[in-house]
Length: 152
Image (cartoon, rainbow, N blue to C red):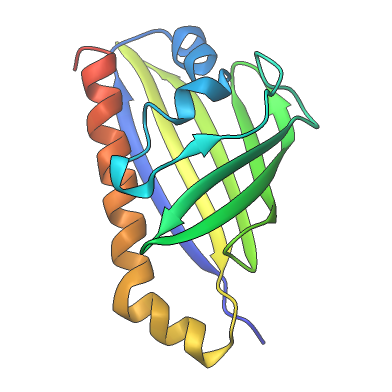
């Protein structure tokens, strides 16, 4: 049985939920919030804004190895949430839920990622050695860039 891991992150932004949601509903902003070391490039031209069923193809490099990734917007509920799932890419499973909660003074943005790694026990070792740390680094970078974009 393959283990499912969860990554959760929350960030307060002093902007209206609708403004934050619109930023994330524009797939072209993915490149802005992805660390340069991943050499991330969108290959397809998704709808803007995204919607349920939107497919996004992109290329990146993980530890110098080119990776092609395809995701589909599984659910899209403006301005509350959306979920993207990996159709093909480096993970056995990748479900990323984006939530936008109106709170006093702004918006709480939550990321909830459920993922599985391929290769059975080798995937477990890879997670322990570098995958968990890399994901934290990617989401920490994203958090810092979002704070900068929205003037936090």
